[in-house]
Image (cartoon, rainbow, N blue to C red; front, side, top):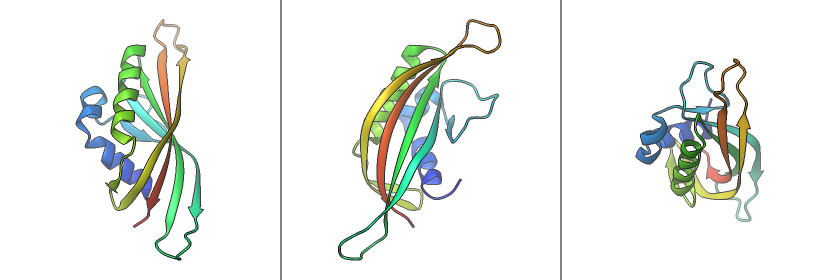
Length: 136
């Protein structure tokens, strides 16, 4: 984990509306198998280098899915709503990176059936975002 992923983890771990729901169970790429719920797992879909007309600061774009995962649908929805409310239109520091803009592209819902023979599946509410940022 490096760069913007580190910055996002730091940023989200410090947001009280999120930590009130999931603590600091916010993971880039994948959660540990034994991690408790609720949790957020964010995954990079793609990234691009952006050209500037003035040849100024290096600007990058990254598309991410934030999967808000919980044992109850209402909890996953609450977590996604808190994340959307916080990150939508965010600008500022994320670790050593500077976020210039955040656009919410959409959301989705899924259910992962249990794999252990129980009735306890996982509700997944996804937030798809694009972030433009200036790397350190």
